[in-house]
Length: 529
Image 1 (tube, one colour):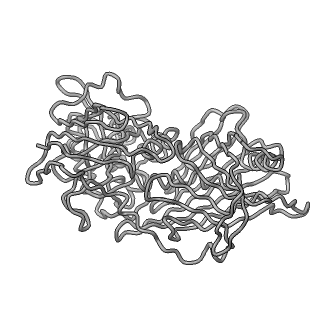
Image 2 (cartoon, one colour; image 1 turned 120 degrees about the vertical axis):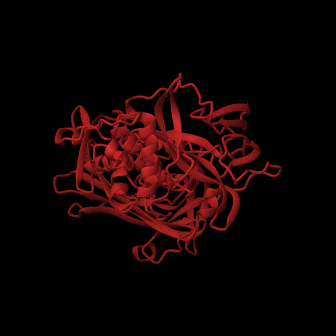
């Protein structure tokens, strides 16, 4: 098992807030009419007090009068001996009246950068994504009419602060992970000071919340001119982030590369039953307990009863998880939808490179293989859908030859080229191959027991696997498939925490569901057979 993606996905969600920094980093100094740059700010990014990266924000007035706001974030973390580098940028252009024109984003989460361009039309928004030479276009509805573009939002906040407002609330457009509307609420706190690299600076503490990361309070230390001096947030215990105002040289100085492996590993609670390792497990019972938040007792956790997992809640913070591979759940209220067959930025199942992998996996079992058929999947085969799913699972396990933790968060198209990644990449590629054949698929993030991982014994590690909606003699069910395992296809020590179709519009929400869980979950093993 390769410990996985959730910690990286939490980082990505945090980056969506970092992209909002221009909203609260303006100074009140007017720009010269001939100047193009209105402001430029640099921040050092710390994780648990160690230098992990930087944030750079710029606002420019273009010759045609439009305003362009750019934000760039780079971060580097360690997961054991592997180093993961993540880079994201966002440039949004709007009219002087605050009407969005276009937004261009880039996300470098693996080996190939994913570019997205959003063009705001009169009645809709066109999204164009590009990676590895492939371009895909989609159309989305316009965001909320009362949602402000970045520069307009920044000026609204600045005006409210100058008027002495104690509460500021607004909606703003964000395209850092996908096109969404984010609600930002800021509450003025006490006069205090902020520590900024050895200097103690007078500041006002603003406590902010962002709808994209509910339950998390962000602390912004802002000086009298409206400049952000320091921002602190802790989305999960053990991962406190600080963004501190700096100059360019300091922001770009060498990094510490903080170690994140401990966030991904979890020891079973005292009194846990032993987990057999000499044979595959088919049934298990776990008791999971969630610690309360210091500032918010409501965790809003909804563990899925899916695949072979059933969840029975005792109270708001304790649940029993029962897994039996021989009795899958009836999917009456969990049927597949169009998004489980559709393409997305993460699952580009129309990519010819992925089609070729499907052809290779099916091999001689393809019964119609002329030119037209090869360009128009699903491919006809002698294999049933369950047989195809297992064939693809084994194929992915063998295909990804570089099994390491150094990949950020790669797309299926990228994985088809690089053959590299951990469980996240295994699960994503398998989901794409299943969809080529018209088999609904999705990914599951959760925990899995491993007897030994990088000198850590008898632990649960965060993990990702795939589910396929497959027929059987008694109906159709969501079947768990773990392509990072050689044999068997799955075992009972998997605990599902969240499910994702990897759809562009719901990807952020899927990440959000992990935030109240990580760092707060305790697992007691009751029985495993």
